[in-house]
Amino acid sequence: MFELKKKGKIVRLRAIRFTLDSGEKELLITNIEDVELGIQDFKTLYFKRWGIETKYDELKNKLQIQKFTGDTPLSIEQDFYATMFLTNMAALIKQEADEMIAKEQKGKDLTYEYMVNNKLLIGKLKNNLIDLILEKSARRRKKLYKRILGEIERNRTPIRPGRSFNRVKGLRANKNGLIHKAAL
Image 1 (cartoon, helix red, strand yellow):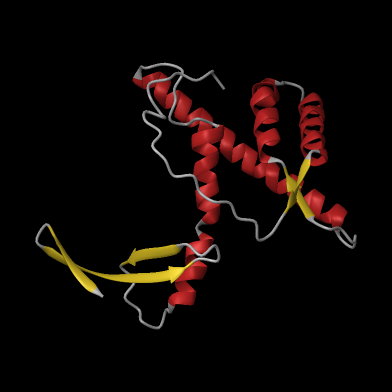
Image 2 (spheres, rainbow, N blue to C red):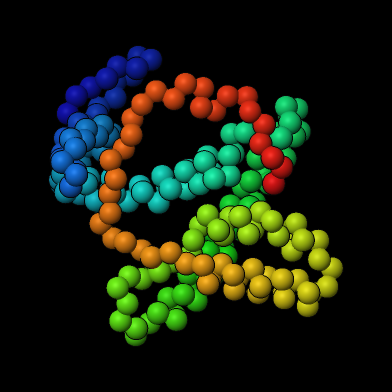
């Protein structure tokens, strides 16, 4: 435990060091003072952040949320909300398709379990979301949705537990400069 003084207030912090499965040393700083939480508890919590990290990766690298089609406040706001709508729709469709895949796999002796290929899901959704929204006929809209869902379900990827890759840490100057992206 150590204390940090910030703006006249004292904040108590806890430093926790541990070694990851890869052999890499990790240092976590937390304001959780509960000493009943041991190093293994923090390792477990640290791993649980992975879902959040992958969502940020999706938003930043696949959907390019930090790049905009224009430079006016309105175009930036529209891009932001369009991207958030797209990612939420993708999450809903992914959940439905993953459930369909899991149901199909149940009872089968497979080397790996499978899940939706997120990159393909986002691509299909980007290309078809406007048509899906603007379709006036409920029957045609449902048919288009089922077609998209079927393509997403067929193009799956294996879940390979325990995989890890070395992180490439390097200087990537101006990675996110003022570059415009293509419209969603």
